[in-house]
Image (cartoon, rainbow, N blue to C red; front, side, top):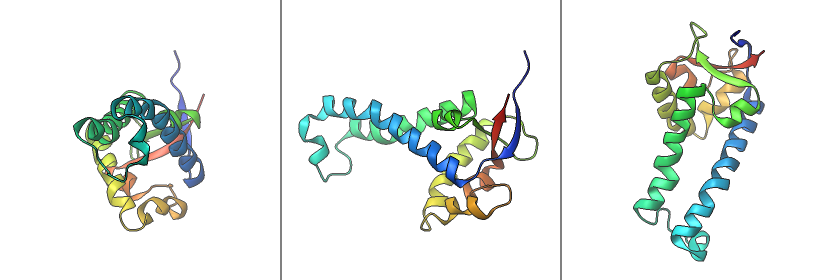
Length: 144
């Protein structure tokens, strides 16, 4: 079986669209669960975290799912939908688990200063955000 080859770097617009798709998928699966656990008034509450199950469902579970998708597929479902994949910036191979973890942590660092680290994708020649630079990764289009 022939391996898929990658070519061009994926820019901000398609990556934003992939993120939107990932958020929609998460909402589709998590809101019914939260509704079942907390009842009808869950969405009316101004409390950020309503206990351990809420914390697990809103923070721990999504983090694990993202890392699992990255580890297995080198992409989230949103990135797969736009035919994109996370690869090691130097080799073009699949990143290590440590790189994926650094990349995940890097999202928070990139988003903190008004999202400048994420907007950096627009200006960077390799379309790397700060999270990609920290982890040594790039997002490339997957060509068959």
